[in-house]
Length: 311
Image 1: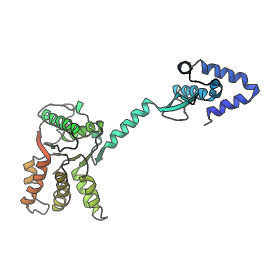
Image 2 (image 1 turned 135 degrees about the vertical axis):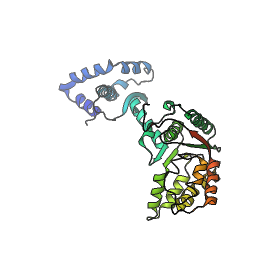
Image 3 (image 1 turned 135 degrees about the horizontal axis):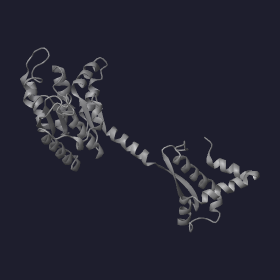
């Protein structure tokens, strides 16, 4: 793309194009933004400022024209602004509102680390969360948690343990909480636990299990979705989930959960019974103590939105 300043210099150096140069600059000086800038800075401009800054003024108007016509510009996503520089006129390029919005949206997404979670949580909002059935209690719990954490992020705050039947909005509420916290500048990690457990089993072959568990357990805010939905194994319970929860309890890091099971049901079934049929109630109780320390149990009751989203 030809530089507009070079174009103007070419016009200035060709005698037979002087009349065209004069016509271009007449239009530049009639530009409302140029006139306003010159009037506001007339005391600061040097005597030869207009002549020496002609190329900058022309570039300013030309870039504005391209933006208005949605044509390619020298700095896509940025708009020109006249500024003073050593008693002369210069241009600074500022991000457009559209670019600022896109950057802000990307920053929000980067604050929510999602692992094997449904795409729908990217747009989950507390403001669109229905409160039918007993879901209002869960929403109030979410709002209270967000308010407390926002006011004192370095203190320990019990998270939520949301449980209920399929499709009542447990995962959506976790996503909405994460997105709301992102708008306030906080980073959250959400993991779908059954998928995470499968990934951990696969990572044994390349010896990356410890690194993956370490990265998750240190998250400032962790939300574990659908715990208890996978086939239980002693290794996942003790060396993955147990390690994560022990660290978070010791470091007092806020943690939220969602499950189809109450805490007691999770302890008696998923955490006690292994795939091999072994029963280990003591180990299950140890894990459950950590979950109860980290989160407050809230039951969610309502219609299944997966089967009847409009009902």
